[in-house]
Image 1 (tube, helix red, strand yellow):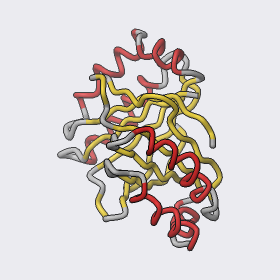
Image 2 (cartoon, chains in turn brown, red):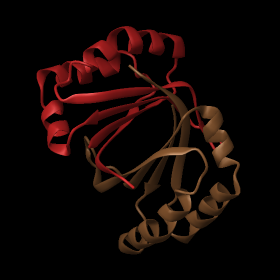
Image 3 (tube, chains in turn cyan, red):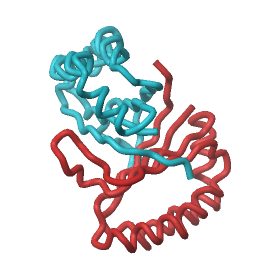
Image 4 (cartoon, one colour):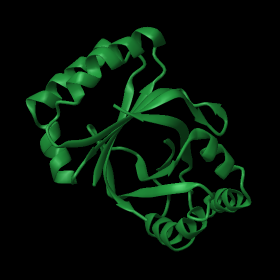
Length: 102
Length: 102
């Protein structure tokens, strides 16, 4: 399996972020070819020290890193990426990696 | 479901990190009560800009946030946490959250 993890930093307007993310961004991102699972954080993203500075975490799964790369090269992914500046006013960090169950 | 995500920043000695993580830390962390799935990144952790600064990502899953909290309060989790300074010379960010499939 391979994962794309998006760490959305706390935006200026959390309610506007959530509305746009759930109503507009998820439907766009779900169209990315090869996506096999899509989970998002629900409620606060905590850290051992308290506030994490992260508002929402998205975990997108693909069968393989090749499938992830191919999916990200698609027009559907292009549309999802182009939508990010419309709501992610706090910025976002994106990580991509192959995974193994241990 | 609930997830504990650990983002290990690039350590001074990657080979030493990997040896300790796979031989010592994983066996300790697998003893945490309530853990239902444990995935780690395999190979490079990339980002759209290239280097992510992250050496390894660990994704630990629990049935619920209550189970995660309970697991983290266990002596087994205490032993795993106490082991982190033995290998994570670059530091680590830890995130904890409930998840929903979308």
